[in-house]
Length: 318
Image 1 (spheres, rainbow, N blue to C red):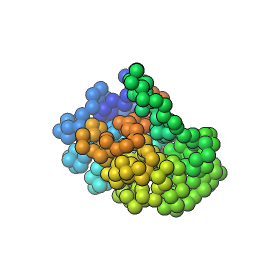
Image 2 (image 1 turned 45 degrees about the horizontal axis):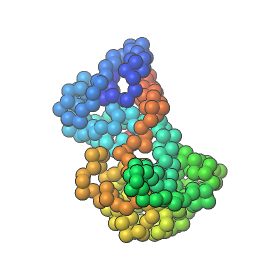
Image 3 (image 1 turned 120 degrees about the horizontal axis):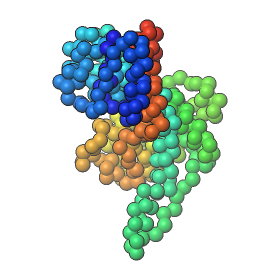
Image 4 (image 1 turned 90 degrees about the horizontal axis):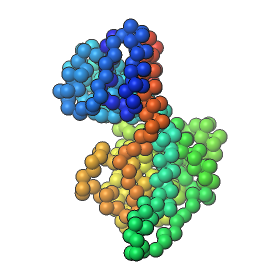
């Protein structure tokens, strides 16, 4: 079979060569590209004779998939697969796999980092100290210890995040479609989503994006939050009504937010409301992006390819 990696995986070429050699050792072909493209024609050109394509988080649209007759697997080196046209793949009987688990630690750590920034005004303090003689004064912060943290979505990343908050001395409550014993053992008390939004001092979002989760954190849900509460989102932007979030932040109805994901990928339009929202710390969708996570991602993605080639597909999500 022919295997093609269509874009870089943010690891050294030497690692790609090492992992690709394992595919060749199994008697298959492997090629990879050192630049990324979002142009459909170029994506088709790179994919047209492949049995397996490996991609990261760039879009893989229907107009490409529909023209591929040899393709058997779209191997996504990413947790979410919403950037791949699932119906088009299904219509062509093409499997989709993902690299779930590679960024659990990275995402959980950024949730804590954003929480600390919002609570301790780290970004604002950095800007203030650089004003030299115009220094405006100290900003008094808050501690995580003793706060109620609401984990919305108790999958692997949600549970990893809960473990870190627990280490700070927080009380944990959670919302999920089904209760998990692992979460209960960790000390999470399951409540309804409305109860979680109303009771939490810190709300952390950990849902995947799907038709059923889009808009889950609506204006109505946001309005349930305490005025002293903050919201952290390192999951997917469209899960939240971000226009409503910006309005409530500016009206002091929510005390702060740490946001890594938006309704689109960066660059973000200048008129996007969250860019001008009060007490909002924004990062450009980097929760997953650490050196360690990228290496782990590459290993998982290539393991997925080898498993498929051996007739034992793993991490299939469709």
